[in-house]
Image 1 (cartoon, rainbow over the protein chains, first blue to last red):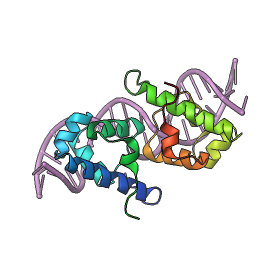
Image 2 (tube, rainbow over the protein chains, first blue to last red; image 1 turned 60 degrees about the horizontal axis):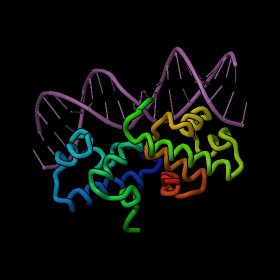
Image 3 (cartoon, helix red, strand yellow; image 1 turned 180 degrees about the horizontal axis):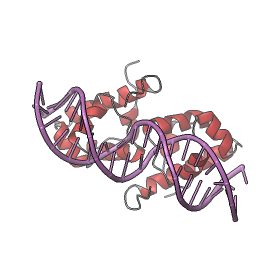
Length: 78
Length: 78
DNA sequence: ATGTGACTTAGAGTCCGTT
DNA sequence: TAACGGACTCTAAGTCACA
C-alpha cells in the first residue's frame, strides 16, 4: 500500500489497537483471521499499518475482537 | 459491488447518514466531493449504499462533513 | 507464531456520457 | 442537482513460498 502522507497516524493507531485487543484476548493472528474471515497475512499487514481496510473489514474485526468500532479506531497516547 | 448479504444494514445506515449530514450542511454531492477529495459519482454511490468505502475514505467524509466517525456509522431508527 | 515479497483477482474510486 | 451506465485505474484482499 504505502500511503505515507494521509492518515498515517490513524492507520498506525488502528494497527496498534488490533494487536492490543488481540493479545488481550490471548489469541494468535491466525485465530483472529479465522474468526474474522480474513487471511492471516492480511491481519499481520493491518497490525503493521501497511493496509487500509474497508468499512466492512473494520466491522468484521470489531466483531471478531468483541470490541466496538470506536474502540478499534481510537487514537491513544497523545 | 453488491454485497447483499453481509453488512448491508451498516452500509445503508452509512449512506443515509452521509446524506443526512450533507443536507443538514446544505451542500450538494458535488460540493461534498470537493471537500472530501472524492469523486461526485462516488458520493452518490455511497449514499445509495452501493459501495464499501475504505477506512481513510470514512475519515475524509467525517472531516468534510465535520462530524465524528461514530456519528457517521451510527445505525439509527431501530 | 509472525513477517515479507511476489503474485493474482475482486472491488474501491475516477471519469465519461446520458437520463 | 442527482442517478445510472460502462469503461477504466489502482489498491484492498486472498494465496503461496520462504525467512
